[in-house]
Image 1 (cartoon, one colour):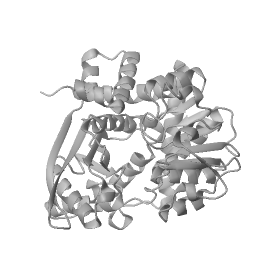
Image 2 (image 1 turned 45 degrees about the vertical axis):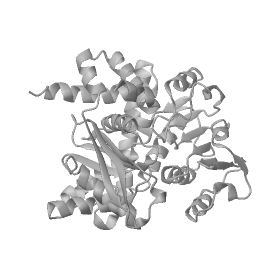
Image 3 (image 1 turned 180 degrees about the vertical axis):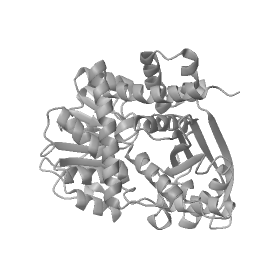
Image 4 (image 1 turned 90 degrees about the vertical axis):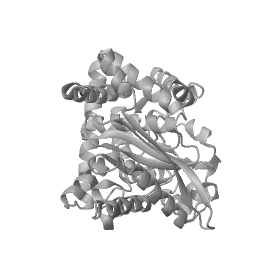
Length: 419
C-alpha cells in the first residue's frame, strides 16, 4: 500500500483531504482507519481476440472503497496510463461525492490499461464483454453499478448491460448507468456533469459578488464534460473566452463560439483550427484573467508551482483533484473561491442515481424533470456546503469533506463491524 500511495498523486490528494476532515471532525482513530482504506479490489488479466486472429492480454480492475451507504457506484475508464492506485483514489472520491449530495451509494472505480483509440469497434466490444465477465463476480444493481468514464461511453455501457443480462438470463437494465436511452438510459445523462458544474459555478459567482450575466470563463479540457459545461455556461449568459484540450486551445477576449468549436471537435478537427482567436497552451489558459476557471482535464493541474499565477476569482473543479493541497492553500490565501470536485462534478452520479431508480421501477422522467431535479439536488447540496463553510469559517472543500465523511462515519458506526 505504501508504494502505491507514493506513486499516485491522486491517491495522496484523496487521503490528504480525508485525513484533514477526520481530524477536524475528531473521528475515533479506529473508525478513521476503516474509512481511509479500500474495502475490496479485484484485478483481472484477460485475453481478447484481435481482428487479425491474434490474442492480447489486458489488465483490468474494479475497486470498491466503501459501501456503508449502499451499492458501490463509479465509472469504468479505458486509458493506457490507468493504474490501480488511480482507481483507489477515484473510488474514494466517489464515496464522498455520493455522500455530499445525499445519494444511497458507496464509491467504486474501475478500468483497463488500454488505449481505446487503438482498437477497432469489434475489438472494443470483445474487450468490454470479456472484462464484464471477469468482473461479474462483484457487479450487479444491488452490488456495484458501473458508469462511463474516460475512454468509455454509452455503447460500452450497453455491452456491459447486455453481457450481464445474458449471464442472468433476463434483462438487468439497472446493472449499469449511462446507457443509451433506448435500453433504459436516463434522459439528460450526457450533459449531467456539465449541468451540475454550471449550476454550482453560477451560485459561486453570485456568492463572490459577480453577476453571471457577462462574467468570463475559461475551460481546460474540451471532452464531453468540458464541451457541455462550456455550452451550458454560455447559455447562462457567461462569456466563454477560452477552451483547451490535450493539444492546446484558443482564447478570445470577445468570447469564442462554443457551438462552432464543438462541431469542429466532432468532425475530428483541432481547436487550433478555429479562426478569429489566439492560440494558448493548457498552462497559459490556467493563468488567464477570468471570473471563472473550470479545469476539466487531468488531476493536479493547479499546484504549489503555478497557483500564485492563477488569476481566476472562482474555480469549479470539473476534474477530480484538479488542484493539489499546496495549490489549494495558496489560492485560499488569495481569497479565490473553490467549488471542490466532490461537489462540483457530481451531476453525473446524481443523474446516474435517477437512471438506476428508473430502471428498478420501469418508470422514467422526461428531460425537463431530470434537469429540474438535478438542479434541485445541486443547489441544495451547494447551499449546505456553503452554510457550513460560513458557520465554521472553513473552505468549501473542507466543508464538503466534513459533511461527506460525517455521513459515511455515522452509517459505519450504526451498522457496526461484522462479526
